[in-house]
Amino acid sequence: MGEGIHTEVERVSRFIIVRKIDALTAERGITAQHSIFSALPPHTRLSVTIDNGIKVYRHYELRVEWGMDTYFVDPYAAC
Image (cartoon, rainbow, N blue to C red):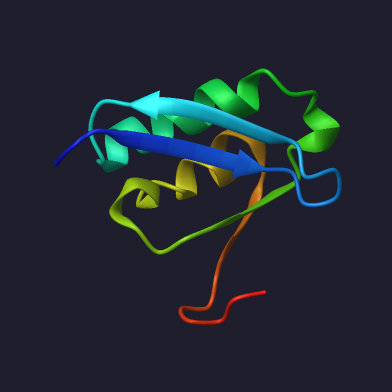
């Protein structure tokens, strides 16, 4: 798989955090999420809404490590 960009957008403020990843894999995706969320205060890490791609396959680790609720977007349901 090729390289890509992992983004997280805070829903209320629209603050965007971006990490370049060298492969679109679950391992690189969770590494990017750890990097992003570990830099944030705990009260800001309550939940995350993620797409249905392979790079978020290990989303359960966010629930286990930080107690974050994880939600998936509905395909083809643009906001």
